[in-house]
Amino acid sequence: MNVVIVGASAAGLACLGTLLKFQPEIPITIISEENVPPYSRPLLTYYLGKEMTQAQMTIAEANQYPQNVKFLQGRSVKRIDGSRKEVILSDGETISYDKLLLATGADPIKPGYCDESRNVFTLRYMEDAKKIEKHLNESAVVVGGGFVGIKTAWGLIQRGVKVSLVIASPYPLWLVLDEGTGRFFENALKEIGIRLYTKNEVSKVEKVKKLKVFLHSGTSLEGDVVIVGKGVAPRIELARDSGIETGLGIKVNEYLETTQKDVYAAGDCCETYDSVYRAARVNAIWPNAMDQGYCASLNMLGLRVPYPGSIGMNSIKTQTFHLITAGILWGENIITYEKYVPFRNQFRKIAFRDEVPVGMAFFNAPSEAGMIANLIKKGEPLKINPHKMVAGELSPRDMFEQGIRFFSQSLNERRPL
Amino acid sequence: MKTVIVRPERCVGCLQCRFNCAVAHSQTRSSYTAPYEPTPSKPRIHIGLSLNKELFPNKCRHCNPTPCEMACITKAIFKDPKTEIVLINPDRCINCGMCAMACPFGVIRYHIYPANRWAAHKCDQCILRLGEGDIPACVQVCKVGALVFDEVNRFMDQEASRMATLIYWGIREKPVAEDVYFTLKAYKSSLEEIRTRR
Image (cartoon, rainbow over all chains, first blue to last red; front, side):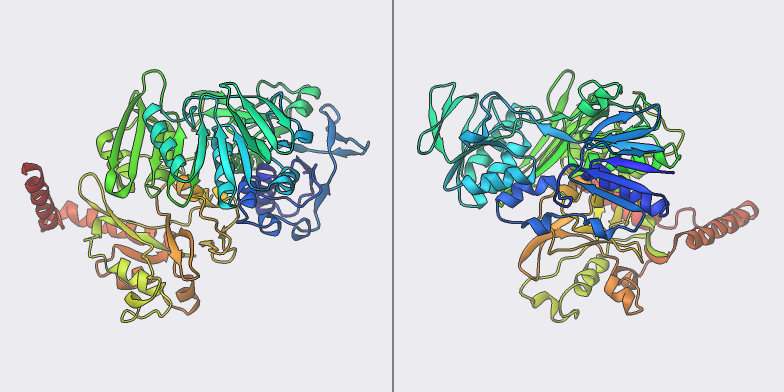
């Protein structure tokens, strides 16, 4: 079996590692567009905060793999020939495959005012971080109230830079949090020294000596750089041009197979089943990508393991707070339960839809968060009293008594897609 | 490969495993000096109450596949290839909190390490003690057999044959006590009743 992996980040490397674990002999080719060895993208904000060096961010070296793994760096794929089972590189070389994994990832969304000559950057690749570092002096403007924006802001604050955060929605993390939690979180952000401009949008950026950023509300901000974190768009051009069905991302079934035979997709580029929305959705985060890469490699080996489904979840940790969120906290038929412990500056909030947990926000309470997040991922109705769940009285024993098993990836268990 | 097997129905909540765990992971590794170290060592096993007020010793299961290893963005969490124990490298950890989000059993906490650095903190199945030919600290000190260090398949065979024997004897004569821990359960339920009355 000859395996070709397109993309050498989370999903690609997870797939490679698993294939090597089970079938150490098979020839594998892994193609990466970037010239630097694979690094961890979520760490870029920590790189800006000077917590990490580039060497520490590297997660794999080309020479650490055995002889049968061919690492092609700085090469991009032009087209996939599904009928002849060949991958055509941009320099004309063709590589034949028996199984192909598309882990092309995602690109940041760039609004109209995005212009590198005016020091307006996005943060997704190592080059971006280096460019930002070069221009950064004492103040910066971050646009976008999602996880990327807030993590970037925190990274810059650790560097000693004054940060203004421009958010289009009424409060940070609007897609996930409900009003009350959002306000609480807003205060927590203000405490660590971020200046917030909510319900605002950048209208234009001018470069005089410093940058002048004009907002819709009329105020203007000054800064050395503008960093835009407005989410990501899956890179589907390669799949689309090769005749693979795509929507927002590459469409896959529950075995992570695309519409073309023997072509799999994993990571930020594909739409997988979301247990909360109960539909195909792109959840572009690192743990999901690793999970999908692992699952895709098992399917490549012929095990037929269905992908259990992903949820959007994330964790932000600063010196003063630690927020873990998963799923959604507002929407139709959603009832939320919350508990606030003032003397520990701690609260827990869990959202239910028809007795199925669909969302959570745990502030300064990391210990039980993983349990609830995995219950949300499971998407099964619970018979546990929700008031006790938010009070932190849940132990794994209750879940065993409920008959919930986290590692029941049995072959008969199938998810609709 | 031997692992720590938890039998929650036997746990009485004496918390000796927690104490011994903290001592075994301290720098001096002595119960006399461990509490006075500049960065006190923290236990890596957690005894929690369930909703029915039953005890559950909760520790890392060293799962395979490993959700925390997959979620770790710095590769600070890794699996020891020889022993298959999931370990944390505190020097690489940046304290981002992703592993706590991924762990389905809620065993990962964040504590300060002796090198004055905050990092993720969880059971390492006493890999140092195993190297010295010893058994994990929590198992060594458990008096009631709630924690057992054994191979899973062998232990399950042993339990199955024990169960078969019990069933065999149960058919022939009635057991002496139906519920072995009835006094403990009665005590717990009385505590619970007092609490609800108040």
